[in-house]
Image: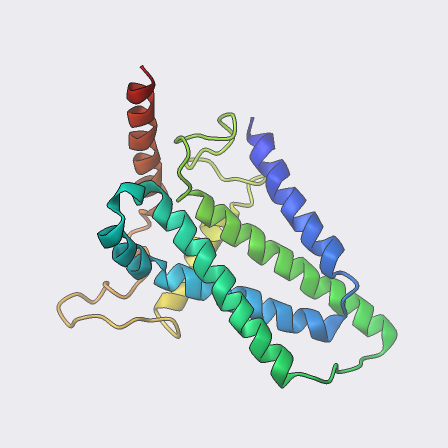
Length: 204
């Protein structure tokens, strides 16, 4: 049933393409910047937010990661959108053909960026280990083998070594690197499995 999760990702991709395809190259270039930056900020800083939330509401342990990721993404995107709309009040004009082609190229990239971020965040969702009728399996490459979740995790890891580095103590050089040992997916798969067993026990 891996076709189910692939269909979900494809639907998101096509909705973005249909929504932004005619917005123009300049507008979509700004949207791309906002989307990617918001996703990077969310992925880089959601864990400290979860740690703070856990202190006040530890009973929602399985919800906080997913909510924090998307809440931080949405908040960052709104702030960036307001800022870029204020700064870029005049729409840059391009030749019609170039504008149309550029608009769809940027829409394609935006759609793929959102699919990658969505795929990564689904690992933190408070669902069963292999949810969507067994279609979401962390051991397999999702979306027809394109593995958008792995692509985003790799991209984030690389960025955390550079512009999105949070700094690290001298005795812990890997502390600033996002998922330095590539354990993100198995870590959350294990956690979903524990939650699933707990729900099953309670149901009995």
